[in-house]
Length: 208
Image 1 (tube, helix red, strand yellow):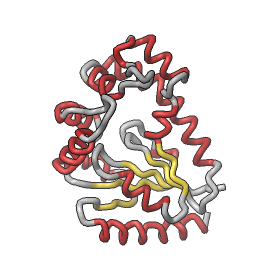
Image 2: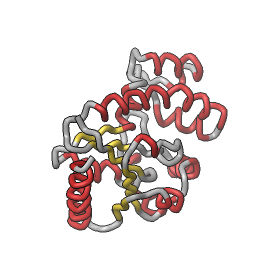
Image 3: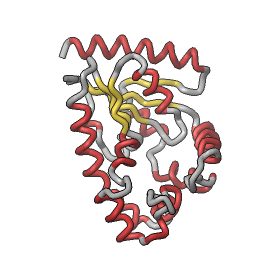
């Protein structure tokens, strides 16, 4: 059971998944808050039923799944709705994150939490790793990624900008970082950075 937990965070489009995938390739258990966030609003879940009751059928796709892009646009343009949604989902997500990280079998585990700083979740982890890129790169990557999405999940550039404005600044994220990965370089450089951090975390985990 893993007792050493590394929290990985970064703004939208920073490449958190690319980084955590590299750790996963080394056999490290990665608990992804975004995946858990999808699980707690899956068809038939209490979370989705509550959202549908509050926002109506317009946030539900024909497939019965949550229309995340539509919901994002609504909550980021109406703060009370965002607060309501946060109050519903955050406890559900946090409970699952703690459960999955505490049962991880690797020497240490990764908690991938996009809003780790915003939601003041640093106490959940032993170390904070920030995936850092220029904000212009965030916008470009997130827009390009979502333009290739299917099933009504696309987000416009204005929506991406609204999401970034609701996240903490790059400087605020870096201020709480124990470690930083620069993800503006090529893949080989990124791999070298992760390799160094992996050895560091193995050492830290072994002395706990």
